[in-house]
Length: 357
Image (cartoon, rainbow, N blue to C red; front, side, top):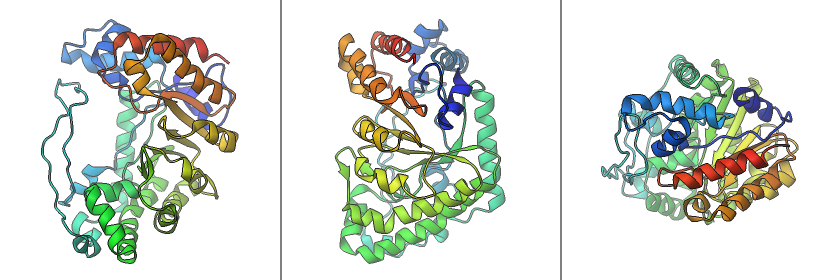
Protein backbone atom coordinates (compact mmCIF):
# COMPACT_ATOMS: atom_id res chain seq x y z
CA UNK A 1 0.00 0.00 0.00
CA UNK A 2 2.65 2.52 1.17
CA UNK A 3 3.30 5.13 -1.54
CA UNK A 4 -0.09 4.83 -3.20
CA UNK A 5 -1.89 4.97 0.14
CA UNK A 6 -0.08 8.13 1.16
CA UNK A 7 -0.97 9.87 -2.07
CA UNK A 8 -4.56 8.73 -1.93
CA UNK A 9 -4.98 10.03 1.62
CA UNK A 10 -3.42 13.34 0.65
CA UNK A 11 -5.90 13.54 -2.24
CA UNK A 12 -8.85 12.40 -0.09
CA UNK A 13 -9.30 9.11 -1.94
CA UNK A 14 -10.59 6.18 0.11
CA UNK A 15 -8.41 3.08 0.51
CA UNK A 16 -9.31 -0.44 1.64
CA UNK A 17 -7.57 0.13 4.93
CA UNK A 18 -6.51 3.18 6.92
CA UNK A 19 -2.93 4.10 5.95
CA UNK A 20 -0.32 4.59 8.66
CA UNK A 21 2.95 6.26 9.41
CA UNK A 22 5.15 6.52 12.50
CA UNK A 23 7.93 8.75 13.77
CA UNK A 24 11.20 7.41 15.25
CA UNK A 25 10.02 3.79 15.26
CA UNK A 26 12.52 2.93 12.51
CA UNK A 27 15.34 3.76 14.96
CA UNK A 28 13.89 1.73 17.84
CA UNK A 29 16.54 -0.87 17.19
CA UNK A 30 15.17 -3.66 19.38
CA UNK A 31 11.77 -3.27 17.73
CA UNK A 32 13.30 -3.12 14.25
CA UNK A 33 15.23 -6.32 14.96
CA UNK A 34 12.09 -8.15 16.13
CA UNK A 35 10.10 -7.03 13.10
CA UNK A 36 12.74 -7.62 10.41
CA UNK A 37 14.96 -10.34 11.87
CA UNK A 38 18.01 -8.23 11.05
CA UNK A 39 20.64 -7.90 13.78
CA UNK A 40 20.57 -4.18 14.56
CA UNK A 41 23.30 -4.53 17.17
CA UNK A 42 25.59 -4.50 14.12
CA UNK A 43 25.48 -0.84 13.14
CA UNK A 44 26.34 -1.65 9.52
CA UNK A 45 22.97 -3.40 9.27
CA UNK A 46 20.87 -0.52 10.53
CA UNK A 47 20.14 1.34 7.30
CA UNK A 48 19.01 -1.88 5.64
CA UNK A 49 16.99 -2.84 8.72
CA UNK A 50 15.22 0.55 8.86
CA UNK A 51 14.27 0.23 5.21
CA UNK A 52 12.89 -3.27 5.78
CA UNK A 53 10.97 -2.03 8.82
CA UNK A 54 9.25 0.71 6.81
CA UNK A 55 8.18 -1.88 4.25
CA UNK A 56 6.90 -4.24 6.93
CA UNK A 57 4.93 -1.54 8.76
CA UNK A 58 3.84 -0.09 5.44
CA UNK A 59 4.48 3.62 5.98
CA UNK A 60 2.23 5.86 3.90
CA UNK A 61 4.76 8.69 4.14
CA UNK A 62 8.09 9.51 5.73
CA UNK A 63 7.96 12.74 7.77
CA UNK A 64 10.96 14.83 6.74
CA UNK A 65 12.22 18.34 6.11
CA UNK A 66 15.50 20.12 5.57
CA UNK A 67 15.20 23.79 6.64
CA UNK A 68 15.73 23.80 10.40
CA UNK A 69 18.00 25.09 13.17
CA UNK A 70 21.02 24.04 11.13
CA UNK A 71 19.94 26.44 8.40
CA UNK A 72 19.99 29.32 10.88
CA UNK A 73 23.54 28.31 11.87
CA UNK A 74 24.83 27.54 8.39
CA UNK A 75 26.08 31.05 7.63
CA UNK A 76 27.37 31.85 11.09
CA UNK A 77 24.12 32.79 12.80
CA UNK A 78 23.72 32.39 16.55
CA UNK A 79 20.92 30.28 18.00
CA UNK A 80 19.90 29.07 21.42
CA UNK A 81 20.92 25.54 22.37
CA UNK A 82 19.19 24.13 25.43
CA UNK A 83 20.91 20.75 25.06
CA UNK A 84 19.18 17.44 24.43
CA UNK A 85 18.41 14.53 26.72
CA UNK A 86 19.13 11.00 25.53
CA UNK A 87 16.31 9.91 23.24
CA UNK A 88 17.63 7.56 20.57
CA UNK A 89 20.71 6.03 18.96
CA UNK A 90 21.43 6.65 15.29
CA UNK A 91 22.64 4.29 12.57
CA UNK A 92 26.24 4.71 13.70
CA UNK A 93 25.41 3.85 17.30
CA UNK A 94 25.79 7.44 18.53
CA UNK A 95 23.47 8.89 21.18
CA UNK A 96 21.62 12.15 20.55
CA UNK A 97 22.53 13.42 24.04
CA UNK A 98 23.88 16.96 23.91
CA UNK A 99 24.97 19.13 26.84
CA UNK A 100 26.20 22.11 24.82
CA UNK A 101 23.73 24.64 26.23
CA UNK A 102 24.22 28.21 25.04
CA UNK A 103 22.20 31.41 25.11
CA UNK A 104 23.58 34.05 22.73
CA UNK A 105 20.88 36.65 23.44
CA UNK A 106 19.98 37.69 26.97
CA UNK A 107 17.74 40.77 26.74
CA UNK A 108 14.65 41.84 24.81
CA UNK A 109 16.57 44.85 23.52
CA UNK A 110 18.97 42.56 21.64
CA UNK A 111 16.02 40.84 19.99
CA UNK A 112 14.24 44.08 19.09
CA UNK A 113 17.41 45.25 17.30
CA UNK A 114 18.38 41.94 15.68
CA UNK A 115 18.89 42.14 11.91
CA UNK A 116 17.90 38.73 10.53
CA UNK A 117 19.85 38.98 7.27
CA UNK A 118 22.97 40.33 8.95
CA UNK A 119 22.90 37.57 11.57
CA UNK A 120 21.65 34.59 9.55
CA UNK A 121 22.69 35.45 6.02
CA UNK A 122 21.09 35.61 2.60
CA UNK A 123 20.12 32.48 0.68
CA UNK A 124 19.71 32.69 -3.09
CA UNK A 125 16.74 31.15 -4.85
CA UNK A 126 19.11 28.85 -6.71
CA UNK A 127 20.67 27.39 -3.56
CA UNK A 128 17.29 27.04 -1.85
CA UNK A 129 15.75 25.20 -4.81
CA UNK A 130 18.81 22.98 -5.15
CA UNK A 131 18.71 22.07 -1.46
CA UNK A 132 15.03 21.09 -1.56
CA UNK A 133 15.61 18.98 -4.68
CA UNK A 134 18.71 17.37 -3.20
CA UNK A 135 16.93 16.48 0.03
CA UNK A 136 13.97 15.00 -1.81
CA UNK A 137 16.24 12.97 -4.08
CA UNK A 138 18.05 11.55 -1.05
CA UNK A 139 14.75 10.66 0.60
CA UNK A 140 13.53 8.96 -2.56
CA UNK A 141 16.67 6.83 -2.70
CA UNK A 142 16.60 6.03 1.02
CA UNK A 143 12.86 5.32 1.32
CA UNK A 144 11.72 4.40 -2.21
CA UNK A 145 8.50 2.67 -1.19
CA UNK A 146 6.77 5.54 0.61
CA UNK A 147 5.65 9.10 -0.10
CA UNK A 148 8.48 11.54 0.56
CA UNK A 149 8.73 15.28 1.02
CA UNK A 150 10.94 18.21 1.95
CA UNK A 151 10.10 21.29 3.95
CA UNK A 152 10.62 23.83 6.71
CA UNK A 153 10.76 23.16 10.44
CA UNK A 154 11.21 26.80 11.46
CA UNK A 155 8.12 28.20 9.69
CA UNK A 156 7.42 31.09 12.09
CA UNK A 157 7.09 30.48 15.82
CA UNK A 158 9.53 27.56 15.83
CA UNK A 159 12.12 29.84 14.28
CA UNK A 160 11.65 32.35 17.10
CA UNK A 161 12.10 29.54 19.62
CA UNK A 162 15.38 28.46 18.02
CA UNK A 163 16.77 31.99 18.13
CA UNK A 164 16.02 32.68 21.81
CA UNK A 165 15.22 30.68 24.92
CA UNK A 166 11.58 30.37 25.99
CA UNK A 167 11.98 32.83 28.85
CA UNK A 168 13.42 35.50 26.59
CA UNK A 169 10.78 34.86 23.95
CA UNK A 170 7.93 35.36 26.40
CA UNK A 171 9.55 38.36 28.10
CA UNK A 172 10.17 39.98 24.71
CA UNK A 173 6.52 39.55 23.74
CA UNK A 174 5.33 40.98 27.04
CA UNK A 175 7.79 43.85 27.36
CA UNK A 176 7.05 45.57 24.06
CA UNK A 177 4.58 43.80 21.82
CA UNK A 178 4.94 46.33 19.01
CA UNK A 179 8.74 46.18 18.81
CA UNK A 180 8.69 42.41 19.06
CA UNK A 181 6.09 42.36 16.31
CA UNK A 182 8.53 44.25 14.09
CA UNK A 183 11.13 41.55 14.80
CA UNK A 184 8.56 38.91 13.82
CA UNK A 185 8.08 40.85 10.57
CA UNK A 186 11.84 40.70 9.94
CA UNK A 187 11.88 36.97 10.63
CA UNK A 188 9.08 36.55 8.09
CA UNK A 189 11.09 38.41 5.46
CA UNK A 190 14.08 36.15 6.16
CA UNK A 191 12.18 32.84 5.99
CA UNK A 192 9.96 33.79 3.03
CA UNK A 193 12.54 32.97 0.31
CA UNK A 194 12.47 29.34 1.43
CA UNK A 195 8.74 29.09 0.72
CA UNK A 196 9.14 30.96 -2.56
CA UNK A 197 11.94 28.55 -3.40
CA UNK A 198 9.82 25.53 -2.59
CA UNK A 199 7.21 26.76 -5.04
CA UNK A 200 9.88 26.63 -7.75
CA UNK A 201 11.46 23.27 -6.85
CA UNK A 202 10.59 19.78 -8.09
CA UNK A 203 9.30 18.42 -4.77
CA UNK A 204 5.54 17.72 -4.85
CA UNK A 205 4.88 17.71 -1.08
CA UNK A 206 5.93 20.29 1.52
CA UNK A 207 6.03 19.73 5.26
CA UNK A 208 5.58 23.02 7.12
CA UNK A 209 6.22 22.59 10.84
CA UNK A 210 5.52 25.19 13.52
CA UNK A 211 5.28 24.50 17.26
CA UNK A 212 2.84 27.27 18.06
CA UNK A 213 1.81 26.01 21.49
CA UNK A 214 2.64 23.99 24.57
CA UNK A 215 0.81 20.91 25.78
CA UNK A 216 -1.23 23.34 27.90
CA UNK A 217 -2.14 25.37 24.81
CA UNK A 218 -1.11 28.81 23.46
CA UNK A 219 1.78 30.53 25.23
CA UNK A 220 0.41 34.01 24.46
CA UNK A 221 -3.08 35.40 24.05
CA UNK A 222 -4.68 34.00 20.85
CA UNK A 223 -5.16 37.55 19.59
CA UNK A 224 -1.38 37.98 19.57
CA UNK A 225 -0.99 34.99 17.25
CA UNK A 226 -3.77 36.30 15.04
CA UNK A 227 -2.06 39.64 14.70
CA UNK A 228 1.58 38.62 14.36
CA UNK A 229 1.84 34.94 13.37
CA UNK A 230 -1.07 33.59 11.31
CA UNK A 231 -1.11 36.35 8.66
CA UNK A 232 2.56 35.63 7.99
CA UNK A 233 2.03 31.86 7.86
CA UNK A 234 -0.70 32.22 5.25
CA UNK A 235 1.53 34.53 3.17
CA UNK A 236 4.29 31.91 3.34
CA UNK A 237 1.95 29.16 2.20
CA UNK A 238 0.44 31.19 -0.66
CA UNK A 239 3.16 30.57 -3.30
CA UNK A 240 3.41 26.90 -2.33
CA UNK A 241 -0.30 26.34 -2.83
CA UNK A 242 -0.46 28.47 -5.97
CA UNK A 243 2.33 26.33 -7.45
CA UNK A 244 0.10 23.27 -7.07
CA UNK A 245 2.13 21.66 -4.29
CA UNK A 246 0.57 19.55 -1.57
CA UNK A 247 1.05 21.10 1.88
CA UNK A 248 1.17 19.22 5.18
CA UNK A 249 1.23 21.15 8.47
CA UNK A 250 2.63 19.80 11.73
CA UNK A 251 2.20 21.37 15.16
CA UNK A 252 3.10 19.69 18.43
CA UNK A 253 1.22 20.39 21.64
CA UNK A 254 -2.43 21.42 21.90
CA UNK A 255 -3.50 23.65 19.04
CA UNK A 256 -7.24 22.93 19.07
CA UNK A 257 -7.93 26.65 19.63
CA UNK A 258 -6.29 27.45 16.30
CA UNK A 259 -8.04 25.02 13.96
CA UNK A 260 -9.94 27.80 12.22
CA UNK A 261 -6.89 30.05 11.94
CA UNK A 262 -4.94 27.32 10.17
CA UNK A 263 -7.72 25.82 8.06
CA UNK A 264 -9.79 28.78 6.89
CA UNK A 265 -8.94 30.73 3.75
CA UNK A 266 -7.58 29.74 0.34
CA UNK A 267 -4.06 28.87 1.50
CA UNK A 268 -4.76 26.16 4.04
CA UNK A 269 -2.92 22.82 4.33
CA UNK A 270 -4.06 19.68 2.56
CA UNK A 271 -3.26 17.62 5.65
CA UNK A 272 -2.34 18.24 9.31
CA UNK A 273 -0.29 16.25 11.81
CA UNK A 274 -1.29 16.41 15.47
CA UNK A 275 -0.34 15.04 18.88
CA UNK A 276 -2.84 13.30 21.20
CA UNK A 277 -3.60 16.39 23.28
CA UNK A 278 -5.12 18.11 20.24
CA UNK A 279 -8.80 17.31 19.68
CA UNK A 280 -8.71 15.09 16.60
CA UNK A 281 -12.43 14.33 16.82
CA UNK A 282 -13.27 18.03 16.58
CA UNK A 283 -10.88 18.50 13.67
CA UNK A 284 -12.45 15.55 11.85
CA UNK A 285 -15.94 16.92 12.43
CA UNK A 286 -15.06 20.39 11.16
CA UNK A 287 -12.53 19.71 8.42
CA UNK A 288 -12.26 15.97 7.78
CA UNK A 289 -14.23 16.14 4.54
CA UNK A 290 -11.80 18.56 2.92
CA UNK A 291 -8.43 17.91 4.57
CA UNK A 292 -6.41 14.93 5.68
CA UNK A 293 -5.26 14.44 9.26
CA UNK A 294 -2.61 12.29 10.91
CA UNK A 295 -2.60 10.98 14.45
CA UNK A 296 -2.98 10.72 17.21
CA UNK A 297 -2.44 7.73 19.51
CA UNK A 298 -0.72 8.56 22.79
CA UNK A 299 2.78 7.10 23.14
CA UNK A 300 2.38 7.11 26.93
CA UNK A 301 -0.25 4.40 26.59
CA UNK A 302 2.17 2.27 24.56
CA UNK A 303 4.86 2.98 27.12
CA UNK A 304 3.01 1.84 30.23
CA UNK A 305 -0.51 0.71 29.30
CA UNK A 306 -2.05 -2.75 29.23
CA UNK A 307 -3.03 -4.60 26.06
CA UNK A 308 -6.60 -3.42 26.57
CA UNK A 309 -5.40 0.16 26.98
CA UNK A 310 -3.45 -0.01 23.74
CA UNK A 311 -6.31 -1.65 21.85
CA UNK A 312 -8.73 0.99 23.09
CA UNK A 313 -6.40 3.80 22.08
CA UNK A 314 -6.09 2.47 18.53
CA UNK A 315 -9.86 1.98 18.44
CA UNK A 316 -10.41 5.57 19.60
CA UNK A 317 -8.37 6.84 16.67
CA UNK A 318 -10.03 4.52 14.18
CA UNK A 319 -13.50 5.41 15.41
CA UNK A 320 -12.69 9.05 14.69
CA UNK A 321 -10.80 8.71 11.44
CA UNK A 322 -11.75 5.56 9.56
CA UNK A 323 -14.71 7.11 7.74
CA UNK A 324 -12.55 9.92 6.37
CA UNK A 325 -10.39 9.16 3.30
CA UNK A 326 -7.65 11.55 4.42
CA UNK A 327 -7.02 9.91 7.79
CA UNK A 328 -3.59 8.38 8.46
CA UNK A 329 -2.97 6.49 11.71
CA UNK A 330 0.14 7.27 13.77
CA UNK A 331 1.38 7.42 17.33
CA UNK A 332 1.01 11.14 17.75
CA UNK A 333 4.14 12.00 19.69
CA UNK A 334 6.73 9.49 18.42
CA UNK A 335 7.28 5.86 19.29
CA UNK A 336 10.43 6.27 21.40
CA UNK A 337 13.10 3.63 21.88
CA UNK A 338 12.13 2.95 25.51
CA UNK A 339 8.70 1.70 24.41
CA UNK A 340 8.46 -2.00 25.36
CA UNK A 341 8.86 -4.03 22.19
CA UNK A 342 5.92 -6.29 23.01
CA UNK A 343 3.69 -3.24 23.47
CA UNK A 344 4.78 -1.82 20.12
CA UNK A 345 4.12 -5.16 18.42
CA UNK A 346 0.70 -5.36 20.04
CA UNK A 347 -0.04 -1.84 18.87
CA UNK A 348 0.80 -2.95 15.34
CA UNK A 349 -1.44 -6.00 15.70
CA UNK A 350 -4.29 -3.73 16.77
CA UNK A 351 -3.64 -1.44 13.83
CA UNK A 352 -3.66 -4.38 11.41
CA UNK A 353 -6.94 -5.65 12.85
CA UNK A 354 -8.78 -2.35 13.14
CA UNK A 355 -7.53 -0.53 10.04
CA UNK A 356 -9.63 -2.42 7.50
CA UNK A 357 -12.50 -0.35 6.17
